[in-house]
Amino acid sequence: MPVSVASRRPAKSPTTPAALGPQLPDPALAIAYDEARRYVQLRLRSLPHGGLRATCTAFGFPYTTSVGLKTGSLQREEYRLVQKHLRVFGFETELVRLPVGGQLCEHYLFADAALLSTLREQLAAHEQLVS
Image 1: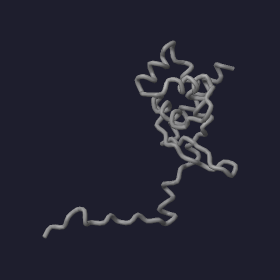
Image 2: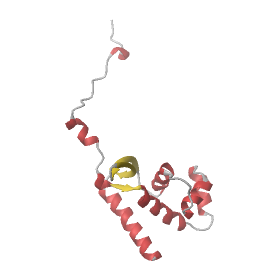
Image 3: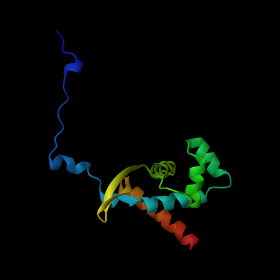
Image 4: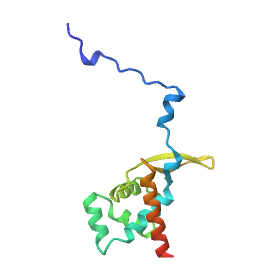
């Protein structure tokens, strides 16, 4: 009689600290919500007239909330929307919570240091132009 696939149990994943280590986010590859929001805000402000509506339509973003993100008039923090805009701008991130000053805060975790460095260089260049 053949063994069914459903009857096979998956192997238990190890729960030792050594096995969990590689899964923990590296804080050196993460940026805080405020830094990510500032970057997205500057990028949205650099879009040509009508570009924000076209971007929102193309990617299914809420237009009114994206306008609030662009102008800095959001009533609450929009973690997922910032992450979606980062993705459109070429920065694939994972939303994680890291401890800061004894409390957990949302951060955007980058896959590698090169992408994080690129974002920070672009942010610094934009902020230098503004000031």
